Figure 1 (cartoon, rainbow, N blue to C red):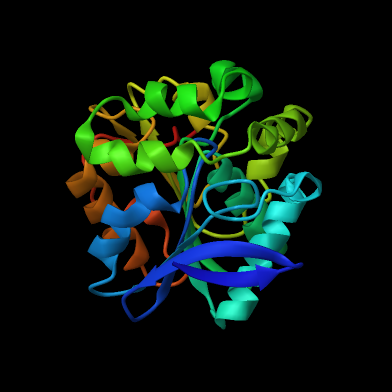
Figure 2: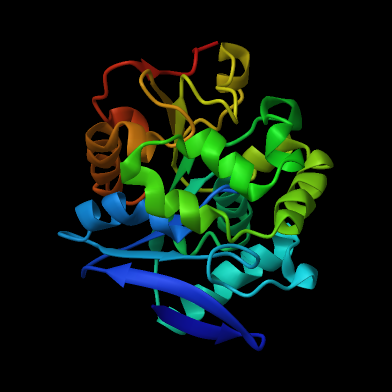
Length: 262
């Protein structure tokens, strides 16, 4: 296990491969661990990083650091300590929210942003995420597949207060204004069968920034990277391979939900 010390607290992280940096940001239910298959896949060409936010996985549990802005600062501090230059961010659930905030404040660092299961409004996120224990949520979302056993167990380490505090904050956020702050190209991924975060309506898709595309995974739940790994990882590599500033609409992807042209 690798770790850095941030504000007298231990932050657990893992890194694989060499090359351009790709940073994976986990959701409310889980830790860095469920990113392992994607990290292994991209590590043949890129340097893959993942870490546990305050209150999750093996990182320190400190209630005063559970606010979204503190998690954003944690990401900034991690990048500084690792000596990372411009990077692609891959955020899931909570990680997608933090990724957007970070990209808006540190656009000189973020090359592009892949967002998985971003809740377009608090009503699109199931209330069970906020009310039940991480143990119950892990069983609900990871299921009984033995391949997910380690991720399911690691998810139990989360402090429920870390989940609730971020949701309480997000409840007061105008998500439309938030996504319009995005200064970089973005790719939005949703699982059609996601029990935790509903996929957006076409009207909501129309609100996405112009340099963005959305892709719906028909056979996926809350973890497209685990449910359809080949599809997810191939899409991720294609996205990372785009030239800086290149619009993701140039990617040839079947079943792509394109924004309507008004």
